[in-house]
Structure formats: C-alpha cells, structure tokens
Image 1 (tube, rainbow, N blue to C red):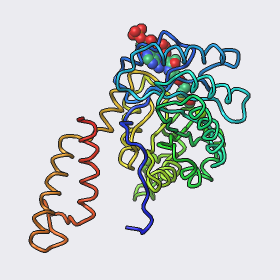
Image 2: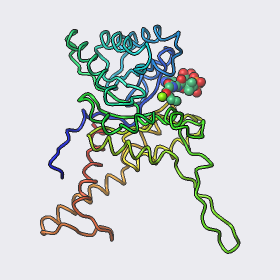
Image 3: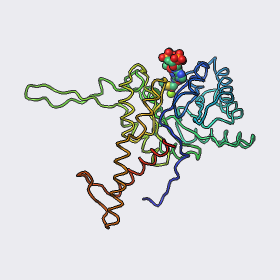
Length: 323
Ligand code: 1VU
Ligand code: MG
C-alpha cells in the first residue's frame, strides 16, 4: 500500500438510483415504495424552465411528507451556469432535514464542487442542520472528464460520481443519439479468412471514459455509478450495460424507469456463487498463512494475497446488502 491513505466516503447501498422528475408528483409515492437504494428527485433536465419553481415546491413537500423508509434521498439541482441553482440549494436544503444528498450535474472543475460546498456549509451552520449532506457529481462533459481526478478530491462531502452518458456524448460530439448502449459503427473487423469473410466485433464506445472515471473514484474512496440506459423497453440491453459496468468495478447504475430497478439491484448484488467462492478463497489463504505460504492453488488456479483483498471486498459488499 502507498503511505498515502485515503478515507473512504460515507458508505451507502448504491446499486440502483431511480430518477424521478420533480414535476411528476404522481410518481413520488411509487418511488418511495420502490426497491431502489437511492431515489433522486430531479430539478434539472427532466423539468422545463417555467416549471422549476413548482418542481422545487413539490420536491420539498415530498421530502417532508412521504415515508422514504431507509432509502437514501437525493435532489438533482440545476447546473452552476443557470439562474436556478442557488435557489434549488437554498430552498431544498433549508427546508428538508430528511434529505441525504445533492446531485450536482455537469461538474467541470473542482471549483464547481467547492462553490456548492460553501453554500451548503453556510446553510447547515445557519440552520443547525443535524444531518450533514453528501454530494454526488455527474461527470458528463469533456471538461468534467478532463478534470475528473481533481474533482474527486474537491470536497469531503463527495461520496459518488455518476457517468452521464447522454450529455457526455453531446459534449464530446459522439455520433449517437441513443442514451447509453452501443453503436453499430463502434466495431472492429477481424482479418479476412481464406474465403475473404470478416467478422464484426462490437465494442463499447463508453469503455475508456467509464474506466477513467472509475479509477478517479476508487483512488479517492468514492462510489462510481453508471448513468442512464434510455431504452427502457430493452431489458437485455440494460442488463448487458449494467454487467459491463459491474465487471469494471462500478457500484451501481441509474434506473430511468422502475422496471430497471430490480435488474440493477440484481446485477450489483454479489451472487451466491461469488460469495461462496470468496469465502473459500479467504479460508484457503488462512490455511496457507498457517503453513507459511503466500500463494496456493484453489480449483487449479493461483490465489495469493491480492485474491484475499478481492474476496474481502466482495464479502464486505454482500454483508452490507444483507444488513
Ligand atoms: O403502473 P402504474 O401506472 O402504477 O405506474 C406506472 C408509472 O407511473 C410508474 N413510473 C415510475 N414510478 C417511479 N419513478 C419513475 N421514474 C417512474 N416512471 C414510471 O411505473 C409504471 C409504468 O410506467 P410507464 O411504463 O407507463 O412509464 P411512463 O410512460 O409513465 O413514463 C416513462 C418515463 C421514461 C417518461 C418515466 O419513467 C420517467 O419520467 N422517468 C424518469 C426520467 C428522468 O428523470 N430523466 C432524467 C434523468 S436521465 C438524464 O438526465 C439523461 C438522459
Ligand atoms: Mg445530464
């Protein structure tokens, strides 16, 4: 390990993050009763400019009057370049002691997070707010991705980052209009075989960006979360995207429709087989340590000290979910 030790962010379950527009009050009860680990009530892009003040009032009322159980509640405020953001923060944070987190969209630099932290800190102090608010930021612009490591260290309130694939595609001028998912032009061709036939292998156009954000998050103790998959009538596509993110090390994924919540929870919960395997690795390594060995074989494969760390991380996650 490095001599630099990083304190992990406040731990929370973050397998699924359900988006709910702040204007669709008929959805609030359903979101509160859903199986999502986190619900975010949106004041930003799902709300038209003229509806912003009413959406704020709806969100304040819902946070104060509905039973959110043990769910994490979050509000997505508007961007720092808009005339709405300051009032989103003041109205919602002053009036909602139940609120757990703010989601800050289109963060471009560490100073963006610093500015919101300053405002929230003043409100907390002025109102003697008992619950300290956490932050999640959306990395969804080229500027945000260019500064992702500095952003990851911008505030002690930071807990998580989401990869916002739709705005990221717009910002980088990616040639797609679908939200998440793959693209038929993102392929590699095999060399021609003897008959001149070539195979097409689809590649994931978001892989490099997702990996870059993941490393910044994990280096600084934050949870990396994969953003939306817009085609909610394609569960197979959602599952494939979620599994690709999970295998990289992502903690969870957004759900833009309730049908995506159970799928996200399932993909980001370690399976029975993974938990059993992890327990066997820990046991095998404990036996190896008693015998004075650092590396042993299990089921014909090498396991060593790094395997214990991977197994323990998986078991810690399974325990947190079971609690
Ligand atoms: O079966 P019921 O009638 O009781 O319920 C419906 C519907 O009311 C409910 N439902 C939801 N419940 C909680 N949270 C939700 N977000 C939500 N959405 C729907 O589920 C039942 C089935 O609904 P449906 O299939 O009839 O869906 P609708 O046509 O009503 O709505 C579909 C959309 C996609 C418009 C809706 O799910 C929605 O508004 N989702 C969130 C969109 C959003 O917040 N976008 C911003 C985040 S994404 C981003 O920023 C980048 C692209
Ligand atoms: Mg966005």
